[in-house]
Image 1 (cartoon, rainbow, N blue to C red):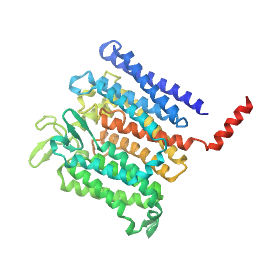
Image 2 (tube, rainbow, N blue to C red):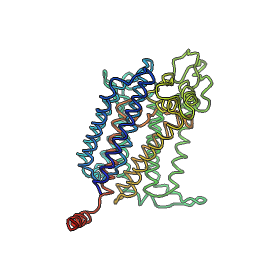
Image 3 (cartoon, rainbow, N blue to C red):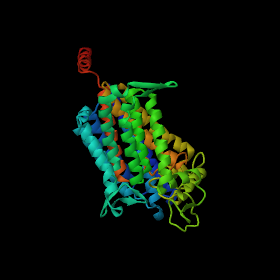
Image 4 (tube, one colour):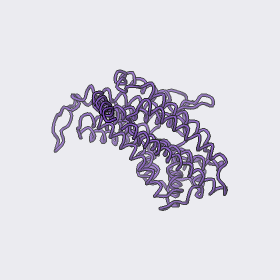
Length: 462
């Protein structure tokens, strides 16, 4: 059975690489009338990287879900193609070479994680260490000077010379490990019911401490780092995991009320939070700080200045793409600010259309579904929580960025997993996939006695 699954996985990986190479050739033909000169090198490089990842997976996680790696390969490859397409326009600011380099490093981190972490349950012993590491990583940008941590108003970076890293991307993994370990230990207490309100059993007042602490932490991130995305990602993940642990709907309702209330108060007290909500409610009209009209995303004085010129350009891109898109290399996604990063989903929508975006979202949905399936199949509570939390954080991140780009929710500044340019997010997400693969292998692997019996049956058949 593992051999059959591995062969199917290898075929799907080859198909994913061929699709990416076809998209790469399409961009060159549309823009220059010829196949890009580096197409063969790019295809061999991507194929070699994924073959190496496949061999490591086959050796160290042979029972893992065969669909996870091909899905990530296809999404990551299409992201590299879009960045290559944007790189051809100097004003876009994209760099495909750096993205390919970060992809290679991400595959290395994926492989190292699988080789080193033979049993993910050992992470449970590091519960509070992971929590401390996550908090430190979150706090570092807030205490650094703005010159070393602030980019476009958000203090989420560490920049030293030509090197930069976004520690919050790694903090989310550490905090999910902490949440899983903590909630496994405390789930019986947190599941106890207090007073009943209408049709909901509320938790006891003495048990509200963890959710209030996490809520306070998310608000601190929102206020001091001006990072609505990480704040929403952190608190939403904790609410999802506490629901998985206790099966109490009341925790979800309390979490929603806390975050909406906190965001409303922060929007009234802090300009940078209020600006985000104002741009969401009415992105087409000017925004004011004091009496001077300025742009949320663009330099002051721009004649196209509105509450969010970036959001408006992204919506125009979606409209230009229509159902089938303008075609790879035939649109103008470079007109969207940060089209290679925050708004790569809008750039993709312009050239691939609604049809292409639906296919892309389906790939993300399949990836999350495979992670949740591993969570359901896990044999111990800690694995269920950890796999569920990692799957949710991936789905939640996609929802937040897609919702912001389409103006469904306020724009947060998160990036599209595996597609947006940037090393920190790409490395963290490849590590996340490695953890899901490890847990999938553990969940799908038959008990030792079953493997032994199957081997003896095959011997007798021969």
